[in-house]
Image 1 (cartoon, helix red, strand yellow):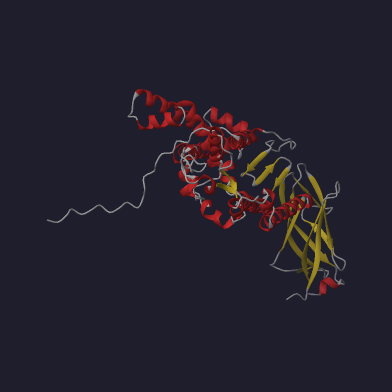
Image 2 (cartoon, rainbow, N blue to C red):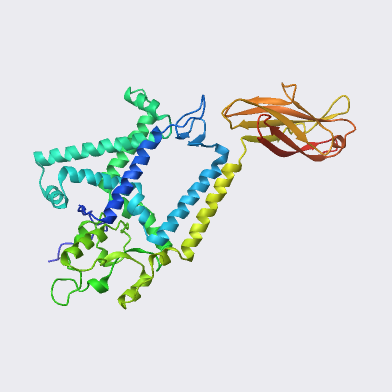
Length: 471
């Protein structure tokens, strides 16, 4: 008689729900403060106003997709200035490298949107269902009227927060009061409703149900962070040489195996097992352990910020290096220098950028025209962008090695009027007299200029003038 075949082992472990316990302490207070500040910035920013003059949006921070511009208080970024946005993204990446190299995954533990909204959803969950033990009991119970009522209240509150989150994001892309009125009267565009619905659903699921699964499996940063950290990186660690062996009897270390550090961890890990991919460096285990050390009359710091390079010194009972010596080291200084350098370059570019953008395209067919009096004329398509918030009449000029006349189609004085925050395309003509060297040579360099007579704004661009001998 043969034994029945065994089921193949599963390659995937079922998720164990995590119910973090509330803890108080310095790091928990810091997380509350960061959560309050970041949420306030996110929800309030679209409602801030900034006077830019008539016919201009007065929203302080606005991504104006219709007119392809980005407003940030007094700064206006046009599509051709996307290098500024690219520079800001590079700075954000270098800043992430800098903080990770110095202090581990502090971004994940404090300011990552997934962490912030998960903390907010957990706060709601504790208010409604109770602390850790109460939530575990409720989870293990069968469905009842009380459980259904608590879950309905919790999920409804989560859904309201998620909807406010999705709505706040859409407000960054259009005038917030106008969109709010359209949403209230059900007259908003379908794209607004669709975007809010998608962001509401993702926030509801990610913050309420997926939680640590996003940090562990969906986010790529845990797998990248190892390249950013080294033996001098300060990160949350367990001093096993002081805590082991665990227990309460004679000869035991400071760790009494109370599992307080595990019960408060939002990703459900045991920090005593060493540094792990799942650790987001929120440091709540430090608060929990310090409280237990206070109760048992033992010194704090069994779990704390620690660099691997300090482990040998601490084991030997000597003083470790100071925290600033870990933070200010060649690697972090290189990141900080690159970050600061890019910031200075971007600030300089913003300060020095002109309020006029000028571009020109020579008309290629034909390259030149010989007039009846022997003069040679070239035509160009001139594009002039007025970045100011008022109508400006720009004087067009030309700089060339010889005498050359400039004419603007439809104008008599060589000037063009450009409406505020718009681009004007106009054909211009450069004409070299019959005896001018420019008329008989091939391609000669010339420079076109645009000047605002009412200010010092000026733009110039180089091009070429084709004479009769041009190929």
